[in-house]
Image 1 (tube, rainbow, N blue to C red):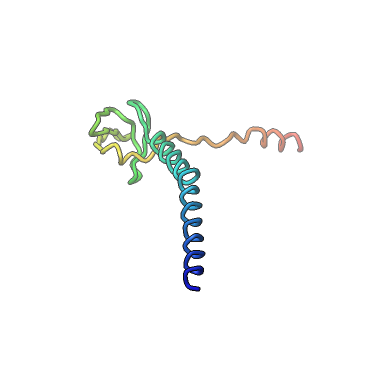
Image 2 (cartoon, rainbow, N blue to C red):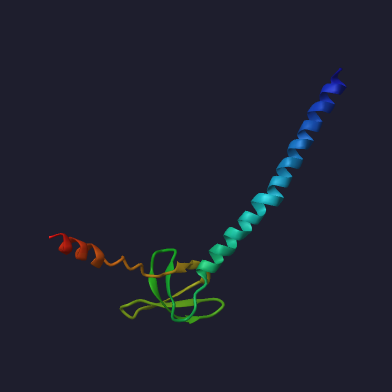
Length: 109
């Protein structure tokens, strides 16, 4: 009697392991690789680009080696960072012009 119950529960366990393994290899693993590639792509900076570090420092890349990235602030201070400290390229977001709203308001008067 115990052999039948033990055999049934072990087959269910094997099914769970196979399903989770398939889920991992066909869904989770490729998604994690894509996220990592996107993160690394966002961190790539070239000389002349503006970059933000993980600490919040924003500056222009003036020199780049395999071991260090040198950023210059607007005040002229140059700091060296390891490449993994670069969080992202810093692109200033310009708010949309409100000229259309001003023209509509003037036209209504």
